[in-house]
Length: 347
Image 1 (tube, rainbow, N blue to C red):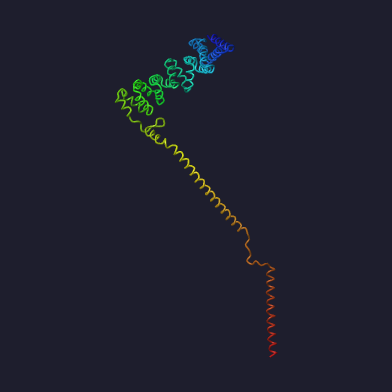
Image 2: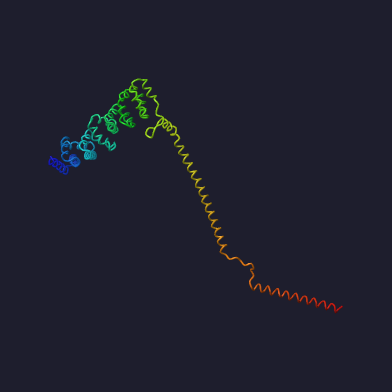
């Protein structure tokens, strides 16, 4: 068996190297998938899976179909899915290569394996749902296995919209139980019910769980629609208060944003002016302190001036002048005496 599988891979590789066009891409891609399959699962398991798939011709035919629908680019993506997820991926995609490659590309990578399994379980139903509602239908089918298909089948796009708000499998089961009743409602009532389920999912689903026949009568429907929303919600599910607050604040967002911008500019200007004044005051005070310190140091370093500023020569000259004055005074006195004598002789 091992030898046969190795020979098969070798033949595919050689054929891919010499063939061109659609057949060449398919043959080469089949060889790559078979090689990856042998590496991941072992040669025995790969051989069994390939036989179950339909052999080399079936694998090449699937890739040729992809080439015809979307060219070598689409075929390349099918090959990548086949190498990563095995022949089950090729088999699922083969139902509609372009449709499923787009759908698989549109869901989170961690859901791809489950999506391929879902297609394998219910290929016709899921293919039709994906054709009608897009990749989100495949996501709901994977996230809520067993009931996701019912929700989308019976409620369509509304079912997908509600499913995005569900927080667990039990809520999905409750919605699936009431899907027929919701689908039979008049369009206006159905829209109101779906809106309430999306707006206040937990309380609405709990109400349906406690009153399973509520949507079967007009009175029950009225009671369901009149049931109070949760007043205070959380980050994921805002309550009535949060929603009303959003409605009030929405028209005021832009004016508040503008006022906040103006207030920020004014406040920033005030702070800047205050800062400049403060810095200038600190600078002036510092300069004054420095000037006072310098003046104090200078006064301590300069010598004290003498009490008498006259020099020795000036003192000596002063003394000489004083002596001369005394001599002149004595001469004056002598002259006065002489004058008196002369006056007596005359007499």
